[in-house]
Image (cartoon, rainbow over all chains, first blue to last red; front, top):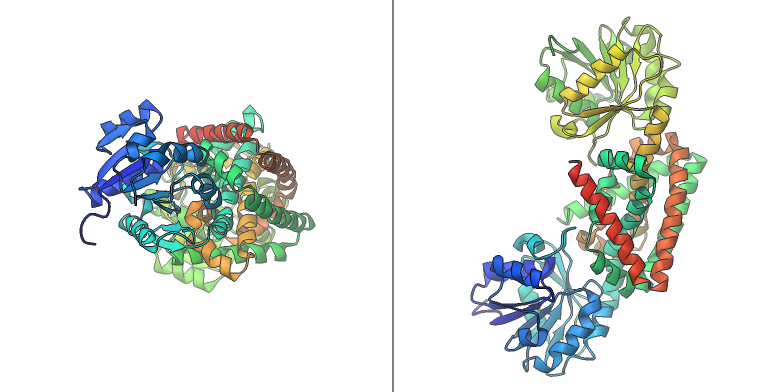
Length: 294
Length: 294
């Protein structure tokens, strides 16, 4: 890559993803000026303390002035409001991207409000931890993970290529697909697992105080992996389930059928069928290890 | 501790747990002689190659001759047969313990056959990984984890104390409780999580070949944590579900109710209720971190 990829980047919403991207820019593109925008004064104070941006503001319109790239990294429920605020202040030809986990909803919230004179490239870096906030970020969060871009038919290929280059700089592999396909795939790989983890941890917490301390003590038997997932940011996940409702509910239907089948197998004491099922699921773990996603 | 805790230890079944315990003995009690017993010649060859035992045999009766401690570490379904084979060969006053994940079933399979002249201390070191076999073991597997002993009313306290000392040597914290209580607690902390993980990974693998490669690629969104759990040893887990059927099915009932409630909340689009649920589950993660089980 010759020259600087982006001169001035406005990052709206400075949580785990926003702050990790800022760290990538600091590391790999030190000439890029970063403007951090967040609603909470505490977040902006942390950004300053960690020197993750050249300027900070709680005014999204001010943040995007002069920016050739705007990254929307707030929870999904704030998108429509962010779009309304930044629309008049965006530079001609600027690229606007986002990092939201549900692309159909992201496009629905942003596309109608963003002016035609900017390039909108919806994106989703599939990376995260159970921690949230600007202090939880780190530049290597994205390394070897996938970023999915879901450009619209009218999106300029050159703008897509520049966003792809940004995430490749962060160490990601980049794929493009239709937004609705993305939302179906992520319902399987991310939304359903989180829903199940939230459920099982909820079930365990309702077993009464006595049993609860034992559940914590003996969590190494498998439960703690679910608690890690179920510790993810509540606002982000509320928004995901509300935004990808149809795909999640449809998949949950299938999951319920499978769970009922497995339940019946246990009730019948059919050891052979259990063994077969558990051997099959082992194989997919191997695929993930081979794909370097473990 | 003065002197050697055990002079001669027979480990019947040399998988992840058996081989990890052998490594602990090698490290912390080098004078202890270890006899490894396994059915498969391949396993015994690995034990020899790794020098994890002083003697190897596929004959359980021969293994326990002269042993002051016998550790049964086979899958639960082999317990009754192991007991029948070793009963006549056990030394007077020897201690027999096991590492099985379901204590009611372990006791039912062993207790009637073991002679009264030995001390039977049922036990469960709550530790593991998704890997199995003698090569997967390591001495630090047990560090900071809990071992639950479920002695019978007639078990001699001195024998319980010696088994507690064994697992403490491995770095474990030791608790004692009734077998049926253990089985209820573990149904929550281990058996239900595994059942759910096996189900969800099964659901995902049935989505068709095209989607499957995408599920693997984008698994970092949460799914891969389930695949790790669902890669656990199929024989061990078949036995667990068959052995702890009642507790697992009862708990599954509660889980299903909670899942239905969460499903309804999503269908209704009740963001406030979702946020409340997800905030509650976050708290239990903190408890686990505080209890140093994360």
